[in-house]
Length: 640
Image (tube, rainbow, N blue to C red; front, side):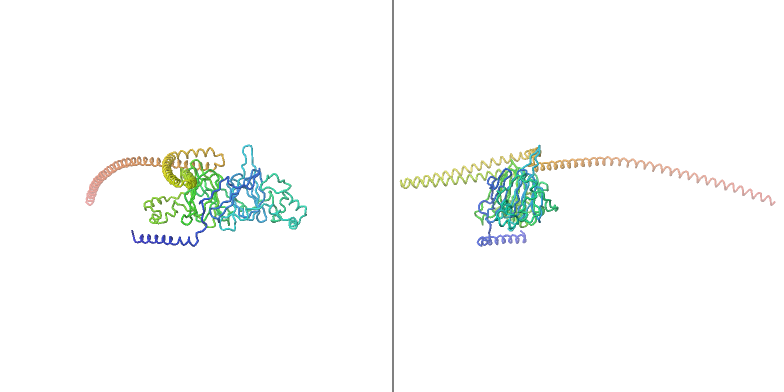
């Protein structure tokens, strides 16, 4: 080990020592606050909701839930409206963030002395601020071929004065009846400056339900509707036919099914919405998320440093496991395994690790609301950003009491995967949960039986003396032997169950690919149903990806064939070029021989010409000599 490594190791151990010294001080000084008491995750089942209104035109049910602490409490409402129903105007006491589960309609609300309107449909998300007066109309688009689904809304109400997501202290909203009719007649008459009979007619009529039929309001009454509310809030016009706000950017909703997910793979997809995605969430401390898990999948273990989560199961069923943040400082907190299904609500406090799992037989779709007063980023156990990747292996080995080799294998997987395959994980979690419940029931029953026997033993002992004491001792030994046998049987049962689970896991792994193919075919067949839209879309995407992969593979094969042909053609062309070069060399040699022959012939011709020239010159010289001699003879004769 180098000097630098030794220094780093010493510093790491020193930091841990300081933290251990500081932790008891924090506990004693009371700086550990907002601890969870009881189960780490709070759950409210669908049949445990409180129904506050119900009629033939719709219903309203509520859920009040906390995160296990006395500080953070949440209020949710589930509003169901039949087609062509009217949710009458109410005044919000808190911010309202809502999600449209099904159906469609029109939302109208007051802002700057005007009425804003926006169309709602399945998957839409929107927020109304505290102090807003709003009402809601569900559409009726029934045809011969289709039936309009009910307009179903999930809403959470947040007190804007609180730093964290918190239910309002004065209720979520007030109806206009409560706002106006609570005053005495003279006060209303003086405030509105209207005749006494108008006030009497207003106050003497019976209260109207929150949700009514939209047909009850006639067109002639629209211009005169809610006159007292208009006067009270200074609204120029409050009617179903009020003009829409021209600033479309203020009335645009966010739709989960029309936007790309933040992460997606064969195990499902997920999306988180904040003020950056939806303008209406500006200045809000609420974020909204949706997760769609395919069968046999899991959201990897993670926790949120700042955000508390309130989730609602929309489709399917699964298991949720929540781990206590600290068993050292909070002895009352208990790790939780809970089965959730459509309509259930569950909470996860910040800093509490959680994993959500779907069963092999069904998918799990849930959405929820989280507090985002500070920038929050989920921390996952697996991946490049995991805290396990940042700590020294030696420190981790000491913390887990295992070897560095084991730690190396544990953190070797650096690929980030938020949604993971987890076949039979939900089934195993449910089995453990049922076993724990059964053990708890058996323990209570044994304690009751022991107490009953002790009471009987005491009564018999008083009457019989020593024989009663012997019977008590015998009964105690029998109970101990019985407890030992039951413990041994439970161990054998657990061993058999583990073997069975391992065998089932192997079989399931072999059938996994076939099951996914069947699921894709089922999603294609059920593509006409809106609830299976996301599955169908995922199947199409997978098929598109497979088709693209096949196309790419085909292109690669074609490219390889072209390269082979080019290589073959190149080989043939090389042989041809060699032959051509040979022919060219032979031709060149032949041409060279011809040129050499021509040169020899030219030289011979030239030599002949030279010889002939010499002979001609000799003959000319001889002729000239003869002629000169003849001229000399003639001159001599002439002299004579």
